[in-house]
Image 1 (cartoon, helix red, strand yellow):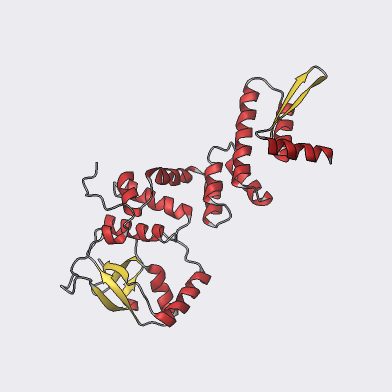
Image 2 (cartoon, one colour):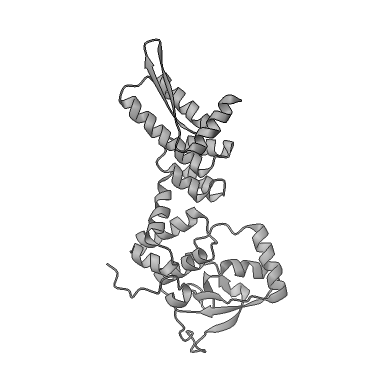
Length: 283
């Protein structure tokens, strides 16, 4: 179990990396102007995509106002006089587009785990990450650096259930993860797909039909209900009919066959659903 003293919940970089003298004995704030070409991308950057439109908008802002928040960096382990970006790579990229030769940098001596925590904390609190990038950041800290979910919760200001739920997303097939990463599916859709019998096929239907998260949840429940009924010996044609009608009506449907006849039962959860069903039947 980690013996690290936990940072204050949700306090972000200020709690994770308290003010300390810069490596060269500079002022406590440690802010200096550094040539942009002496900075290099960090190895622990959790974000893979920055977005052209967003970068251009930030570059326009930097041209007008400058870099308002210094980049956090640590001395490069490979190149003397150079620095590895810990937090603020997006600002560094936009500053290059804005034509800045120097940018303000706060330099700290940080070990790998603290650098990874800082990079993840900034991106999560700024909401700069896709759900999959966030989940992969949590997983890397847990697996590579032995971080606990309790410490992660403290560092990034997210609840432990939130972190656990995000990590569960990584169990989805790669093709579904790519759809979430690209923004074609939301995190809510991804969570609803976790228990699906065929998450890949259902994900394609979600996109093609514009299904809501609640619709996906209902389809998954119906699929599992059909599986249970199949295990109890219900006819496959009846099961297929239940699923098709259930999706079209937005209700749970039961088909019971008795010889040449049988019964069709529509289950509604409230009077609004019943009124809607009756209205459609009358039309």
